[in-house]
Image (cartoon, rainbow, N blue to C red; front, side, top):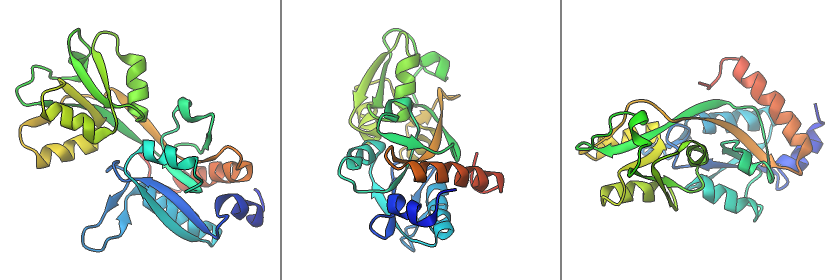
Length: 227
């Protein structure tokens, strides 16, 4: 295992671990409206990481995975909780997955689309956030439907609400929460993607990459947050 000083040079160059979390992913991080504290698997693991290294922690909130990726160029964070999609491997190194989330489709209650298998048919328009990991997987799967790229997950939902598409792709838990707050919509049966979630570091951080691989394996084997 790398020495602590070597690790902190890469993982906390400012003296604090700046951990990027995706606030649009309700399956992984949530804001407690009463306490203002971030909870969920990503927050829990970030706290455990800081404790392991005896270092201060700052959870840096972003509105989407795309925002996290854009911020990487500006050196705004040290570690990021994000899906290890192959399209990101040129810039980032990833730990083993610490959990997996699923993706499905949201449709209107009046839609004839009942399951994931019904969606990829000719003429069906699917809205999906262009930089989401599940969209990358969807691009590799869709053969007949029309895939419409949006700026973020919220924009995909807006297209469905305004009838500009027939289905909106998204993380199952987030879509289910949307349905609870917005009558008239439902999540189809099944999932089209299982998206692993990992801790990313910049590729130059070779010591941190090795450490995080061991850290996540030990963390998950101890029975801590994972699916």
